[in-house]
Length: 278
Ligand code: AMP
Image 1 (spheres, rainbow, N blue to C red):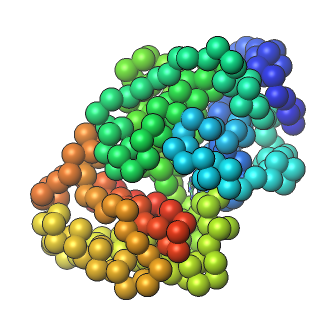
Image 2: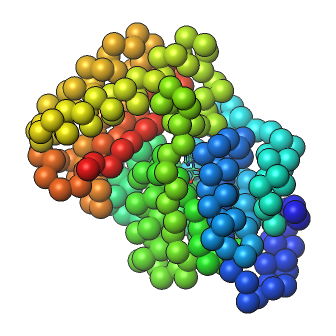
C-alpha cells in the first residue's frame, strides 16, 4: 500500500497502470466498518483501490466541529492495509486549498434543504473537494455511503450535470448491533447518550412499520418519528423529513418512493440517519 501526500505522487502511481480499473473511497478518516464496507466493495469491483483521508475544512460550517473531529491516521492506515488498499492520499489543507484557491463547485436547489439548510456551505465544500478528488484520481468508480443520503443525491446530480466520467456506487448503511448507524462522531457520545442515540433508528423503524401497515400521511409519519425521539431525554431534533428522493421536496403523502431522514443532537452530538421507503 502506497501512502502519499502530494498530488503528483498520486497521479504518477494512478497512471502507472493506465488500463486497470480504479475505485475510489473518499473519507475523512477515523475509519469504522461503514468506511471499510465501501473499501471492500471497491476492492471486489476494481483492479486497484484508492482511499483519500482528508478532514475537509470547507464542508464544516462550525470551526469547533472541525477542530474536534476525531483523527487517528496511524490506525486508519493499518485498517486500509489489511483491506488490501493500493493507494492512499493524505493531503494537507494547503495542498487541497493553496493560497490562491478561489474555485468552488455548487449544486443549487437540492443543497438548500435538510443538511444544507442546517449547515450552510456544507455541500459546496463537499462537491468542491469531491471534484478535486475525482480530478486527482480519475477513478472509474467512486463509493459513497447511504448513511449520508443527501450527499449521495447531491454528488450524483453533480456528476450528471458536469459529465464526470466516474460511476457513483452507493453502499448500505452499516449499523451497530442495536441499530445505531456507524459514524466517526459516535465516539463523542457519553455512555448515556450512546444508549439514547438509538432513538434515530427506532424512529425510522417505527415509521417503516406504520408505512407497511398502510399509513401514507407524511404529516402523521413525521409526528410519529418526533414522538419516538422525544422519549429520549438527551435528544433534541434538528429536523425530521419525509421528502421526494430526487427533488428533496417535502411530501404530504408517501405515494411512490420517499426519503425519510433526520438530524438529532443527542447530548450535543449531531447524528443523522435515514431510510428509503419502500
Ligand atoms: P466520512 O468519513 O464521514 O466523510 O464518510 C466517508 C464515506 O463513508 C461517506 O461516503 C459516508 O457516507 C460513508 N459512511 C459513513 N458512515 C457510514 C455507515 N455507517 N455505513 C455506510 N457508509 C458510511
